[in-house]
Length: 126
Image 1 (spheres, one colour):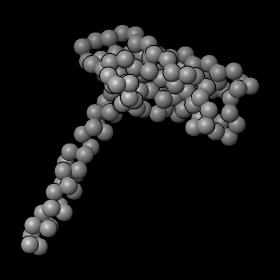
Image 2: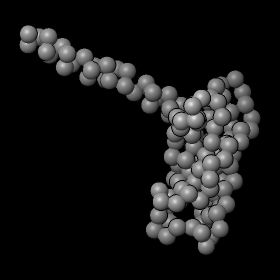
Image 3: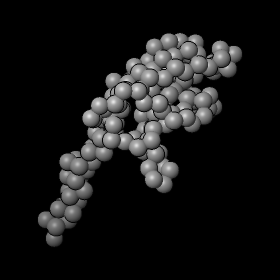
Image 4: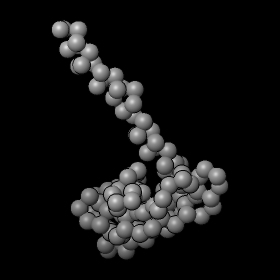
């Protein structure tokens, strides 16, 4: 009986240990080499994204307020496995938050419109 209980207890741990990070690893691979340049409301963001994904989107927010509503992420060059993207983000200086972190939120949506493969990117700590 103790042996069965131990097995029942350990199976979920082993499953999570061996397979639990698969989705996290896949999500890390969707957006790669994301780089941010700029400050005070003017940012240039470049990176790579898996070419096998569907439509990609982005927003800019600080956790309380959304500065740029959802937009389609424009993709530039595309090879067999990866596509390049480059964004120019401009937010008026008078609209920038004080004592906050400005975050670019990159993501894909599934067929039902739910956000998947999300990647937050810090633009600037103000």
